[in-house]
Length: 534
Image 1 (cartoon, rainbow, N blue to C red):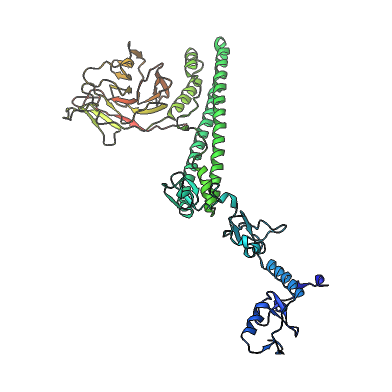
Image 2: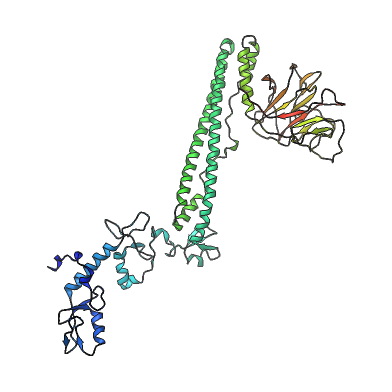
């Protein structure tokens, strides 16, 4: 019948010793039928002259032999277990669960560094009672206990080696890491946490750079498709129609294929970096020092990415072929030619660069504005210290900025001038004495004076005079070896030097021409910002 007794509905008072007022421990019964803890009644009688019951005060002639109350002991054990289970909290998501509990798991109160397990209060009891288990090392509850132990020494990983960037135990610092600086995990955790913000900023910066490059490539594809549409204008040219269409198709296909491949690669890198950003953000919220530091180590090596700063999709160029065709059809295709010229100038204007003149290179007679945007010829030769960068005979000046790859474009106002020269020059040009100005010597320049319009080459290329020329645009494609000049106001191409060889950096170069006693060429050359109009 004892097994049928429901102790869970009883209170603690039903199982309390009258002496210590606590739940019975090894309950025994006196001859008068009252129950006490064996320790409590023994100590009580040790202090008395007469042996009597603490409850009913019944006197005993001799000290009674105490008998274990088997039924009461069983009920006390069942009551204690029931109470301990009811009082123990269930495990919350962020807490360490008991590894022994089945069904509903309780919150662990200790972890054993010998058993590699965590225990709730109930399942911890053997470690508090069994002699061999009482020797085990207990610690505060820890998740993934096996991962927290040194595989070599089977000791808790409590320190961080700054030399090898790994978590170590105390024994490791006395052996393999003896000469290495080590710090507590918490200290290194705080250091690495502070680095997360920098990593996140770098990841976001890489994402933004790739998004910008992605847009640039997509815009180039759209521009290429628009350029391809102009092949419809060539339908009237029966002789070249098929060849032209095939050329456009192949070049466009190559450009689109290149762009699509780069787009996929960029999108993949953005996805990888976005995932890395999520990992960084997730890791920044963890308070688990060990898990943080072990995961942080993998963050130090970002996913492999390409350097996109020099990557670009080159739109196919149809200008040369179309220009030859449209020149022969000028009378019938004037409107279409104007549209083409507008598109061409807009295309090169997007590569505008901001350049300023370098006074260290200017001939002593040249006068530069404070902002470095204007230059004109002066009547007086300034006394200047010798400088290997300075021109000594030709009235030239270079810009501070140079370019050794890619494309660039700038515009110079030549309004009200009767003579001038501008273009680009190699950094290694001869700047002293009499200079032969040709592409062979490192100069690609357009010259204008009363005798005409010339691209300086060997032989010189004579060009039609352009009435009321006010502003000249200079476009350079370094990698393609191209230098082009444009009449900006008329939106007309003037001349292009193709097949150029650029062996070092290129500098924009200006010459305002001679001007004495305030003659008609006194106006300055002015580097102006690009004004793109629809």
